[in-house]
Image (tube, rainbow, N blue to C red; front, side):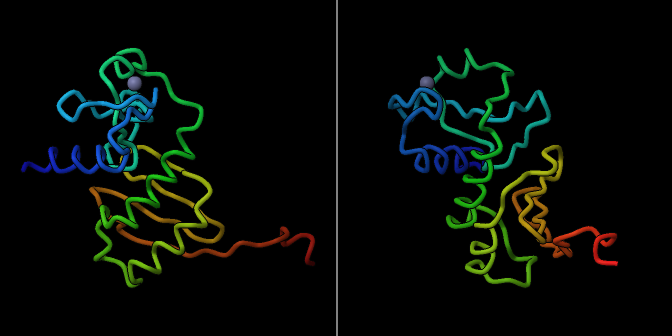
Length: 148
Ligand SMILES: [Zn+2]
Protein backbone atom coordinates (compact mmCIF):
# COMPACT_ATOMS: atom_id res chain seq x y z
CA UNK A 1 0.00 0.00 0.00
CA UNK A 2 1.21 3.49 -0.79
CA UNK A 3 1.73 5.92 2.12
CA UNK A 4 -1.39 7.89 1.19
CA UNK A 5 -3.52 4.71 1.22
CA UNK A 6 -2.13 3.64 4.62
CA UNK A 7 -2.99 7.11 5.95
CA UNK A 8 -6.50 6.91 4.49
CA UNK A 9 -7.05 3.47 6.02
CA UNK A 10 -5.88 4.77 9.42
CA UNK A 11 -8.23 7.79 9.30
CA UNK A 12 -11.14 5.60 8.18
CA UNK A 13 -10.63 3.16 11.06
CA UNK A 14 -9.94 5.91 13.62
CA UNK A 15 -13.19 7.69 12.63
CA UNK A 16 -15.08 4.37 12.73
CA UNK A 17 -16.09 4.58 9.08
CA UNK A 18 -18.35 7.55 9.65
CA UNK A 19 -18.28 11.04 8.18
CA UNK A 20 -16.69 13.40 10.72
CA UNK A 21 -19.03 16.22 9.63
CA UNK A 22 -22.51 14.62 9.32
CA UNK A 23 -21.90 11.42 11.28
CA UNK A 24 -23.33 9.12 8.61
CA UNK A 25 -21.61 5.84 7.72
CA UNK A 26 -19.33 6.12 4.67
CA UNK A 27 -18.34 3.16 2.49
CA UNK A 28 -14.57 2.73 2.44
CA UNK A 29 -14.39 3.22 -1.33
CA UNK A 30 -16.57 6.38 -1.12
CA UNK A 31 -14.63 8.11 1.64
CA UNK A 32 -12.72 11.33 1.07
CA UNK A 33 -10.03 12.81 3.30
CA UNK A 34 -10.96 16.27 4.53
CA UNK A 35 -8.38 18.74 5.84
CA UNK A 36 -10.37 19.84 8.88
CA UNK A 37 -8.57 23.21 9.00
CA UNK A 38 -8.63 23.83 5.24
CA UNK A 39 -5.38 23.24 3.39
CA UNK A 40 -6.15 26.32 1.26
CA UNK A 41 -6.10 28.40 4.47
CA UNK A 42 -2.70 27.01 5.52
CA UNK A 43 -4.01 23.90 7.30
CA UNK A 44 -1.63 21.06 8.04
CA UNK A 45 -1.47 17.87 5.98
CA UNK A 46 -0.58 15.89 9.13
CA UNK A 47 -2.84 13.05 10.21
CA UNK A 48 -4.36 15.07 13.10
CA UNK A 49 -5.85 17.49 10.56
CA UNK A 50 -7.33 14.76 8.36
CA UNK A 51 -10.82 13.40 8.93
CA UNK A 52 -13.05 10.86 7.20
CA UNK A 53 -15.62 12.76 5.14
CA UNK A 54 -18.45 11.81 2.77
CA UNK A 55 -18.28 13.34 -0.71
CA UNK A 56 -21.31 15.53 -0.10
CA UNK A 57 -19.94 17.12 3.09
CA UNK A 58 -16.51 17.61 1.57
CA UNK A 59 -18.07 19.45 -1.38
CA UNK A 60 -20.24 21.64 0.88
CA UNK A 61 -17.46 22.49 3.33
CA UNK A 62 -15.01 23.96 0.80
CA UNK A 63 -12.66 26.40 2.59
CA UNK A 64 -14.74 27.09 5.67
CA UNK A 65 -12.84 26.94 8.96
CA UNK A 66 -14.84 24.93 11.53
CA UNK A 67 -15.14 26.73 14.88
CA UNK A 68 -13.88 23.68 16.78
CA UNK A 69 -10.83 23.04 14.58
CA UNK A 70 -8.31 23.63 17.39
CA UNK A 71 -9.99 21.24 19.86
CA UNK A 72 -10.36 18.64 17.08
CA UNK A 73 -6.71 18.94 16.02
CA UNK A 74 -5.56 18.63 19.66
CA UNK A 75 -7.71 15.53 20.29
CA UNK A 76 -6.52 13.88 17.05
CA UNK A 77 -2.89 14.81 17.87
CA UNK A 78 -3.18 13.01 21.23
CA UNK A 79 -4.84 10.06 19.50
CA UNK A 80 -2.06 9.94 16.86
CA UNK A 81 0.54 9.68 19.66
CA UNK A 82 -1.46 6.87 21.30
CA UNK A 83 -1.81 5.06 17.96
CA UNK A 84 1.94 5.55 17.19
CA UNK A 85 1.06 7.46 14.04
CA UNK A 86 3.61 10.18 14.77
CA UNK A 87 7.31 9.36 14.74
CA UNK A 88 8.76 9.95 18.22
CA UNK A 89 12.21 8.48 17.59
CA UNK A 90 14.00 11.84 17.82
CA UNK A 91 12.74 12.43 21.37
CA UNK A 92 14.36 11.54 24.68
CA UNK A 93 10.96 10.73 26.23
CA UNK A 94 9.24 7.35 25.91
CA UNK A 95 5.98 7.18 23.89
CA UNK A 96 4.04 6.78 27.15
CA UNK A 97 5.68 9.92 28.57
CA UNK A 98 4.96 11.87 25.38
CA UNK A 99 1.33 10.76 25.50
CA UNK A 100 1.00 11.82 29.17
CA UNK A 101 2.56 15.23 28.42
CA UNK A 102 0.27 15.66 25.40
CA UNK A 103 -2.79 15.43 27.66
CA UNK A 104 -1.93 18.94 28.91
CA UNK A 105 -1.98 20.52 25.44
CA UNK A 106 -4.52 23.34 25.32
CA UNK A 107 -3.53 25.43 22.31
CA UNK A 108 -2.04 25.38 18.85
CA UNK A 109 0.22 28.36 18.36
CA UNK A 110 1.09 27.82 14.72
CA UNK A 111 -0.55 25.72 12.08
CA UNK A 112 1.43 26.47 8.91
CA UNK A 113 4.42 24.26 7.92
CA UNK A 114 5.53 23.16 11.38
CA UNK A 115 2.66 22.82 13.80
CA UNK A 116 3.33 23.81 17.41
CA UNK A 117 1.11 22.35 20.11
CA UNK A 118 1.34 24.12 23.45
CA UNK A 119 0.70 23.05 27.03
CA UNK A 120 1.59 25.14 30.09
CA UNK A 121 5.40 25.21 30.03
CA UNK A 122 5.74 22.79 27.08
CA UNK A 123 5.78 23.07 23.30
CA UNK A 124 5.61 20.16 20.85
CA UNK A 125 7.05 20.87 17.39
CA UNK A 126 5.55 18.69 14.67
CA UNK A 127 6.62 18.33 11.05
CA UNK A 128 6.70 15.57 8.40
CA UNK A 129 4.83 13.07 10.54
CA UNK A 130 7.23 13.47 13.49
CA UNK A 131 7.37 15.27 16.78
CA UNK A 132 10.78 16.76 16.09
CA UNK A 133 11.30 18.26 19.54
CA UNK A 134 9.68 19.02 22.87
CA UNK A 135 10.75 22.29 24.46
CA UNK A 136 10.21 23.18 28.10
CA UNK A 137 9.98 26.81 29.14
CA UNK A 138 9.33 28.79 32.31
CA UNK A 139 5.80 29.73 33.12
CA UNK A 140 5.69 32.57 35.61
CA UNK A 141 2.58 32.86 37.70
CA UNK A 142 3.01 36.62 37.91
CA UNK A 143 4.99 39.14 35.87
CA UNK A 144 8.39 39.98 37.42
CA UNK A 145 7.25 43.53 38.22
CA UNK A 146 4.93 42.17 40.87
CA UNK A 147 7.64 40.09 42.51
CA UNK A 148 10.05 43.02 42.94
ZN1 LIG B 1 -21.00 13.78 5.62
